[in-house]
Length: 164
Image (cartoon, rainbow, N blue to C red):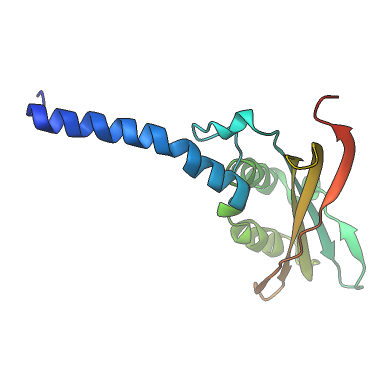
């Protein structure tokens, strides 16, 4: 079955495609800057503006109150695979992809963890200084599955320049 369109409808469809193609780079740039969406994904033109390196570190506070790193190997193969899948999605969608589900799964799998702390970071080129800048967000999850997100953004300048 072939869809028959009038000439006016064809013009509207073509104009809509051209308009979306013209406006998407601006929308993608906004998502990339505001929500740390990967500029190399989602048909973005912002990939030519910056580099994108993401990190996701896990630490936990145990029964004794000390903070220790959480090794992904200690989660078992299925949960480890899901954690890596969450990392890949977070690396693509940035802060638009929530970490709550992964935190609930880790807390359910590890009864010795009283508080889970995730640090997500993005390393980008700072256009003003020409240096790499790193921003981090820390997410804390308590055993009761209550989530408290700390709005702390840490900026640190890397010594390498873009031209190096």
